[in-house]
Image 1 (spheres, rainbow, N blue to C red):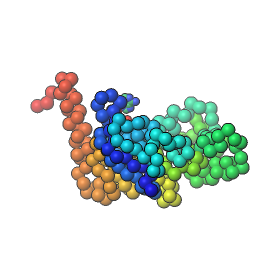
Image 2 (image 1 turned 90 degrees about the vertical axis):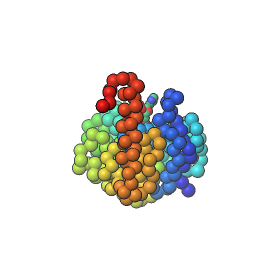
Image 3 (image 1 turned 180 degrees about the horizontal axis):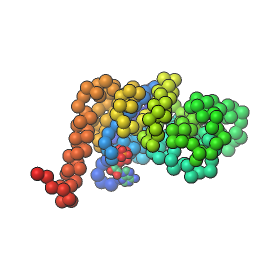
Image 4 (image 1 turned 30 degrees about the vertical axis):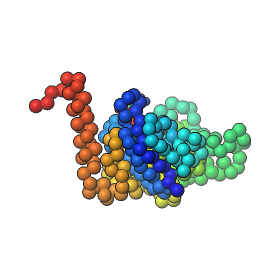
Length: 254
Ligand SMILES: Nc1ncnc2c1ncn2[C@@H]1O[C@H](COP(=O)(O)OP(=O)(O)OP(=O)(O)O)[C@@H](O)[C@H]1O
């Protein structure tokens, strides 16, 4: 079964589409790296994939069901852009964040032995057991990202979706973080990663999608490196910008 299936999806916040006629399937067990210029619609596409935004046209299925009917808390771990830095204001411990991953499963029930075991396993998997009783605010950016992954694991997610998770994380921690994502993927977790560093994507992901409003490429990293999709996608952005400038008269061309 496919984890995510988009057919002819179009969406705009206004009348102008920011995602246009995108068809894309993410198979279970895939590690998809989503790249594209700034403002090219990557975050929007991810939110469409997860059923958090409804398309104006086209269809989205998650694990074979219409995305909008999906209880995202149950099978999907979503680490939104900036969530780790925004969360620093909260007076909350690492363990408490990871325990939140269990909430969709326990409903109004008690937090039991099994829940505690799952939380302990999740902390251990991402290597933050030693930090469990520390305040989230007192962790580094890279450590915080791991905590949010642990929360998704505690929720027994089948799909992990991350929107530029390593922004503000130092190079060494980033490398370890991407290694962790790959290990989790090799263990069967489906991963969708928005990432501006194309080298990271071609090294770690099993498939690449390149977006600039429309889909310019979807396939294996090796095919992406050999294609001119990247130049086309970024070139299209440049043309769009020039077009905008032409209209507002703020920029003149030779
Ligand atoms: N909530 C919103 N309301 C209106 N416009 C939005 C909203 N969110 C995004 N946009 C616009 O939609 C377009 C695509 O934004 P999106 O965040 O999906 O792109 P992105 O590729 O993830 O960008 P970046 O790489 O800069 O994070 C942009 O022009 C953006 O300004």
